[in-house]
Image (cartoon, rainbow, N blue to C red):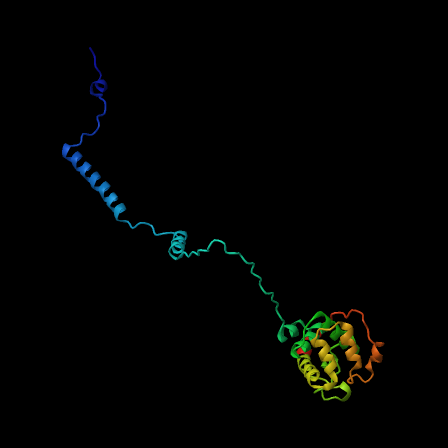
Length: 227
C-alpha cells in the first residue's frame, strides 16, 4: 500500500489547552472585575431631585388652608376702576395741539376731559391759525409773562407757554368763569359761552358768531418749539 506523505501527516487542528491553574486565575480575575463594577455602582451618589420635585416639596411644606363655616354668604368683590394720566414729558413728546391743550389743563389742575379738550383746541384755533398753532410759542395769545402787550408776546418754549397760560387762568380774575366751567367739566356750549363773556376777550368773539365748531385737526408742532 502506498501512502503519500501529506496524507500521513495531515491532522485536525486542536484547540489550545490552558493549564488548570491559568483557568482558575482567569475566573478569579473575572469575578474581581465584576465585583468592582458592582461596588462602584453601589458607591455612586443617587441623582438629586428635579426642579419640579423641589417645587412640589416646597408647596407641600408651605401649603395653607382656610376653613369657612357653613352658611357664610359669598359677597361679590367690586374693584375700583383706574386710569393713567399722561405727564408733561409724555405730552411734549407727542407734541400736538391737543397735547398742549391737555398740558395747560393738567398744570391748572383741571379735568383733561373730552369736553374740556374740545373747547380748548377750538379756543386755540380762534387765537392762532390752526396749521401754525404754535406761532410765537403762544397758542392762546396770552400776554401773561410773554413780554408783549395784547397777547402778542412770545415764550421760549411751548412748555413755558403752558405754565403761564395755566397760571393766568388761575390768577387772573377775568378767567374765573372759564375756570369754573372747566372745573365742572361742563358741556362745551357752557364753557364756550363763559369764554365769550369773559372780560379778557375784548371782542367777545362777537358773542360766538365768530366761533368755529368744525372739528379741529390734529397738528404736530416742530420739536424745537417744545424745548
